[in-house]
Amino acid sequence: MEHLIKINLPGGLVSAGDLYEILLIAEKAGADSIRFGNRQQLYFSINEDRLEDLETEMLRTEIYFEIDNDAQPNIVSSYVADTIFNQESWLREGVYKGILDSFDFQPRLKINMVDSQQTFVPFFSGNFNFITSDISNYWYFYIRFPKSGKYFCFPSLVYSDDIPSLAKTAEEIIFGNKKLFYDQENTEDQLFIKMLSKKAGATFQPITSGLKLPAFQLPYYEGFNKYNSWYWLGIYRRNELFPIGFLKDACQLCLKTHIGQLYTTPWKSIIIKGIEPSDRYEWGLLLSKYQLNVRHAANELNWQVEDVCEEGLALKKQLVREFEEADLRTYQLCFAIKTQPKTGLPGSVIIKKNKDGLYDLLHTKDFNPNSKDYEVYREAVQSDKLTAHLISLCKNFYDRQSSHIDLAPAYQNKDSDPEKVPEQVYQCNNCLTRYDKQYGDSVNNIDKNIEFTALTDYYCPVCEAPKSEFSLVGLMEGFYQA
Image 1: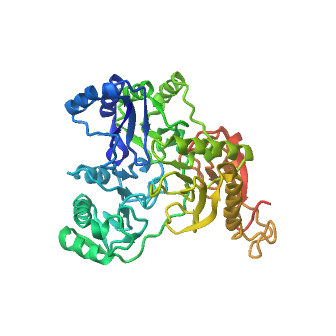
Image 2: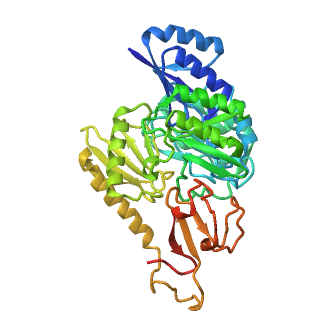
Image 3: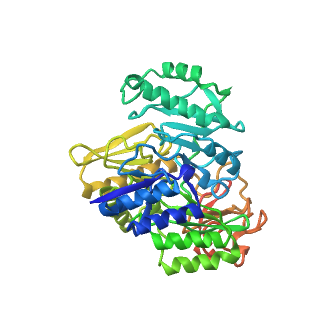
């Protein structure tokens, strides 16, 4: 008999030293691989006869863990996205760490802390969702009662330092009043707000404008990518399994090159930041040693599957293979496979198994995975018919997008100067990063107004693909390519 061991990594970060110790314990207990979950946690499996020794080692090292259970979900944060997927917010490393360090309890409900300027980490996959506002150190607070799909916003902004205590008080109210707030079809939102406001003792700020969801775009989160004067490395595994030997070597290389921590993502991958250019070659050798591929297609990376779910993973592999055969574009979309009710996975498109073993297809009204307004597209679809319907749904999405483009006349709008030369936009075929002359490329120290055709030895600032891997995709300022 196998047991599933779960270890929470609050905020999705873990020091290289702590992870190395976890890996040694897991390896000693007979595990040969690790996987990561949708909530940035860590899993591995061991046999029954190794369980007692594992418990002894975990208690000795004071590592919190659960066996075949998920009573205390991990705290999710967008810390992993900081500096590499967004740099415009007031939310920085010190704020994340200050909040995470202030949690003096193991939450029983799902807590998310998310920067509203990014779209890499989902906004509303928790019970308590703290989302940054435009006011420094103040957050929107969205609440979803356990086993309910209904969300509502607390009527005031919440101060950063009060997040741990507010979450603890809110959790105590819910578990102390289950008949009102736990697994109920109808709940008294206003009563909960009144009870929480009375007990919280927190600093609140009036909400002057509502949360505006950013347009969704999943960044390419794999491979070597340059930011500022460093590199970050993203690693995704098709079978979700990371060899323990590789992770041990990665931790040792982090320590050798003075990288303090590693990050887990809600896409079941890991990211290593702060790689010096002089150390990149050694990281490449490590990938080669374990023959790890870091060039998966973008339409394979935009999937959410339940944790440790072989059925969902097998269906994902089937659909990805069929998408590839159809050469299907899935840019700005992400897909979620739900084999169990009320799993809470976010997605633009939801593939949901029903009680008859068939699949219902749903999508958010605006195809933004952070939206909670769903529409049913098809019901009771057999698994071998899913791809045809999904291709049709993707076409529906892009038809909606293209309906907003004015293509008459084809290359010039009525307000443009006929003598004016259109500004061309080029896009990386691998990660979809664009080069636009009017912005230049600060990463590669290219000034504004430099034509793409004039660049020599140019490489993509995100995935480092050569200039030959870029294609002309658009003409700016009223001009469009047919």
